[in-house]
Image 1 (cartoon, helix red, strand yellow):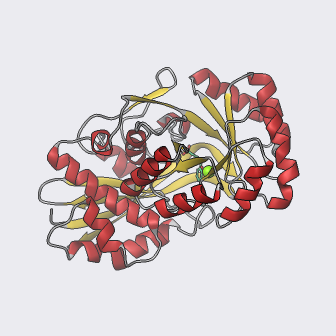
Image 2 (spheres, helix red, strand yellow):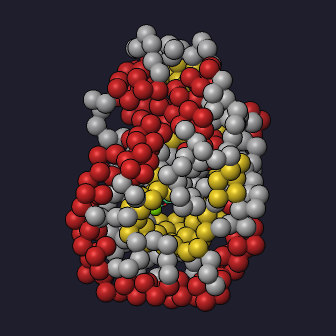
Length: 367
Ligand code: OSB
Ligand code: MG
């Protein structure tokens, strides 16, 4: 395929409720959508970079800038490109994996729409539905948390993840465990602790958690390995794993026994699949993380979550957990599961009228 041009579209998507983590509170998603136009087909993708560089170094204005200034010109200069070629062409540019992921995913979507193949089939999915968990933010009080979890359990979510930070950890976990019995439960610290907290974190061992996600800093693989020895709760990495090479290092060091795979964080679905394959070969469980995506990003994540090594429920929640109105037909939970889209490419289309209403800017980068 030859790329005719690329559209960068910003949309404002208010969240149904504020989402608080150890690194900040999100009230609304400022989402960068990418549309790649080729003579054969168009492809869509969502860049998962957030408004501020608090989860990772990337942020949405920076992602748009690096795409416009460096990445899109490198791609439109090519006479022929497919998804594998995007990674090759962008390889000299350091970092900016979320921006790279969005461009690679949009090209992959265009390519698969042209050939009539779904993301699920292309990636090697082995299921038609995926079990879903939900990520529950830090709340102002335990009663408020119990109400929120109660609602999600009633909706059918098969696994609850609680965001934790120093001062909001043992007590909320204890309260949820006591109230909801043997519900599948895990926690996510978003790097809020240090190794000196290991004895305190061992207090979580009493609650039979599936895992603790990213307790320590992003670049602390060695200290995660030490912490893993001190906890019975399995250690899972999110922020620390930006590539298959990082995953290999983490496995060698025994820094984790579970990995949260987010395609945006690792530079795209091709790298996400490599991490899946590596983990599967090494007996490391994986699950699909989320970045509060709209239906465009969610569709591809749900396809990835259907691969055989995804043995734990993901943060692939229904559209209504995030947005009153999604830009695609809403993803809806059925018996705790989402259907894996089966149509060509990501298998869903944004609704042009909804898109227009939420758009804050559009930029066309001609080839
Ligand atoms: O750490 O997994 C995380 C959302 C934004 C940034 C980081 C994280 C999250 C979530 C929400 O936990 C997952 C989701 O439901 O999309
Ligand atoms: Mg996380």
